[in-house]
Length: 177
Picture 1 (spheres, rainbow, N blue to C red):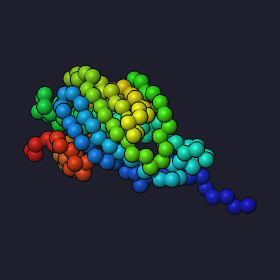
Picture 2 (picture 1 turned 30 degrees about the vertical axis):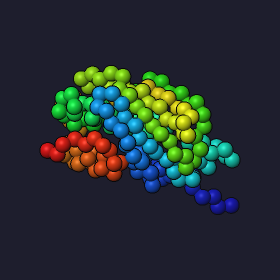
Picture 3 (picture 1 turned 45 degrees about the vertical axis):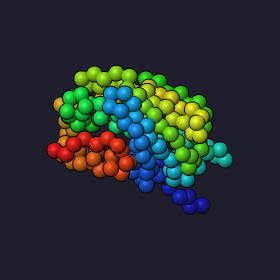
């Protein structure tokens, strides 16, 4: 009997393109940020997670918190130092998944800045659905304090950041130049 090859998990996420946030609704640099997302990932992602009981994988919930927290770190560093940095998730200090998140669920996400160092920041993020807390996390984000792009083209990354902030309708954007 001929069997089809196993699915490549990266192919399942390809349509997601890692643009997981839908909007950024509030930004207070140095303090907090709020936004929204929808767990509208491909149905194939949920087929085995779990059969007949689809649940959004926790790693994607953490990524939502990291993306929103990263935008807060960018705004905070810009306000404090006048540099556009590119934060990346460096450590999950704590993550609690309090209630299942089904496919196609609209989530409210909020993050607050706990601390900001020269090359890293600590943020706390909370994901809610319909006013009910679904996940909380404390995430460390690292960045080049000089605003470098870890081998990437800083201008291309800055253009990407501005484009993403425009797509998300963010009330905060770094000035051009």
